[in-house]
Length: 508
Image 1 (cartoon, rainbow, N blue to C red):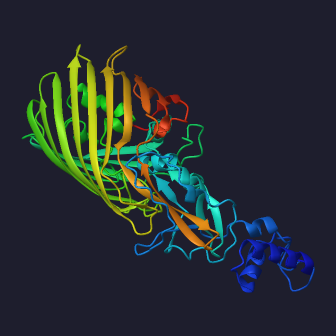
Image 2 (cartoon, helix red, strand yellow; image 1 turned 90 degrees about the vertical axis):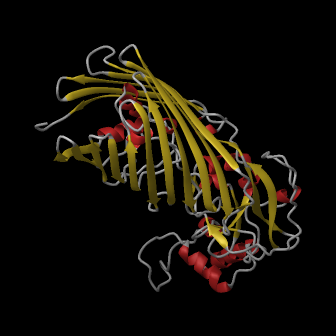
Image 3 (tube, helix red, strand yellow; image 1 turned 180 degrees about the vertical axis):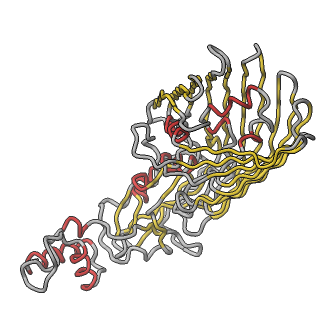
């Protein structure tokens, strides 16, 4: 680096951030220099070529300052209007006019920052990002305390629960081994193991999510002649009990062909990684009852951690079945499956939910399937979050499907379904967006009441058909059309389709 250029670069950095020390400026120039060869002590290579663009860009972990509880800032124009709208005009929120506000002490007006390296959001967080215009220009700090404006939507990772052909590909890439451990006339114990084969990037990958290989999964189930069922799952949810406590009907055998979470229980942890258990009294006819639990922790991927317990009741006749589930889900550090311990999170959330389900078998091989889920969530503030004072949050999902077997040939399965994935229908929160106040030379906060209800309504249309071909092969096709995916009105329709022939090798 030549001395005149270095001096000019240092002056430019100081003009943007006058609070930096000479040591910090030198460190910035060294760490952002472009490598042009082995570093030396001579004047030929040094530490590299000067890269002023990289030197002016954020360096290291990006954080957002958060407002302290005891802060007495009066410059934050909090308008306590009762509207849960997203575009309330806040004049103080527009006071930051440049992308690089000059200060090395950008955190002087707020509390400790919260890292933005992994802003994972679920449905609530994604709706909030879309509804809050202030979050388009959020003040953030790099590791040297330099201030920048950042659109938080560029930093998020969406945990997408929507159906796609990707899930069918995952099923085909899964090794399944089942065996019977105990077989008696009155008692049976069986187990099933699943493991994913390594996957290469596929054209069926969902662009809205970044899925990784799932861990090895296992389920152990016992069946007693008195119609008593117990099950334990490791990294495997127990959908058998959720679909109606038993899989004796056509509906219970076919509902798994639908991929939308509206046909399962979206409040059962938002991830399967963890422990699952259930016990049920489930005769083929008459009253059924059961309890189930799930304790999940997906710390390595999304940071989801929750405990769920529920009670199931049902009535099954010769050609029909109805049931209800009452349950409680407690989340730690995340809110409805997103923003785990981040800037858009809650410290603790409790969701009371109910699930209503039913099926009607007709014409010997057909079933009409319906499911409705409703939840009521209460959230506690997280001290390192931009959100506070959560209202009561209400959400729901629903799904209806028509499924049949032996439709065109013996052993085939066919289904049509329409559903609405889990969506917030009521609730709001106070969003404190940091900004740089040049008059005071400190960080201020714009506080606005923002709706958690998304501006769109996703509707998913699903179709599947499966047909055995001989003893070893199976033809599988699946198609889904999602209108306004993730409940964002600005997103167009998204289609996903797959058709494959699956061939099983080996002696079985």
